[in-house]
Length: 287
Image (tube, rainbow, N blue to C red; front, side, top):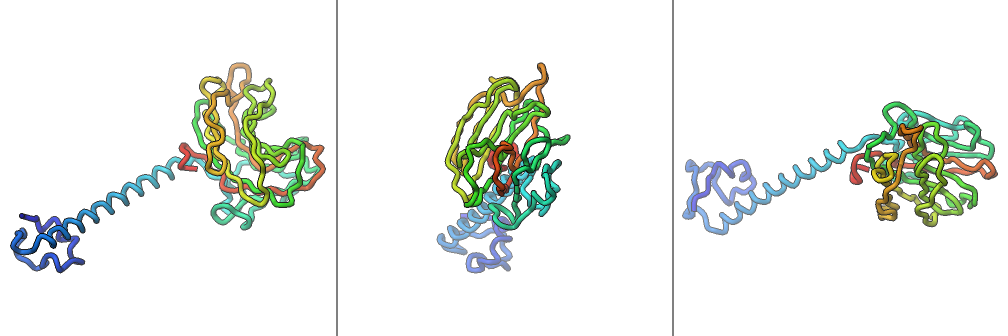
């Protein structure tokens, strides 16, 4: 049996029992070592090769995932600089906090008091209504966000939205995540003139983070556009076809994302809601 000494030289300093490194002979015969030593050497080299290969695969996967992240609005800058627009009736209604959080070091705190009107409605939101951040016709994206209601958050039968993908100047949003009667809800509106359709809901557990991942194909064409959604890692809305963009005549209207709280102005309560971990990506793994 012949083993080429130079193939193993760089791995064997930690294994002097196997091969004398000062050997003048570049080949080692079976007479120089027993079969157990040969097997040990082969096992060590195989393990090293496997470890290197695994590490390369992991690094490639990590790079691919990072490369698939399109944008973050996760508060990890420690301020509001990740967002284009801030809507608050009173300065300080939106803040960055260190507790509670569900990822990283920071989260957003949104406070909405009775009468806090912006553009004629009660809202406190961060939005991406700016060039380079719109959702465009034909795009296929994943969105992840987490929301927490404090344990003393009051129950209300009035409508409220904590996240929405809204067309520019087209009224109600094509897709929205809602809160009503202590239930999380997914609603959608296929076109600007259609009524809002209810797709899914589940009870809110106050004091606990709830994670939502939406996968959306943006299109005004019902046979092209689609929505699917995961709640706390579980697929709760299997992919279904629907138009996901409204139109102005025949022209698709770009959507933008907004989160915080937007509600019926007849709701008289003062409330606080927390958001964290907003990420947009090309794949489920990236968000």
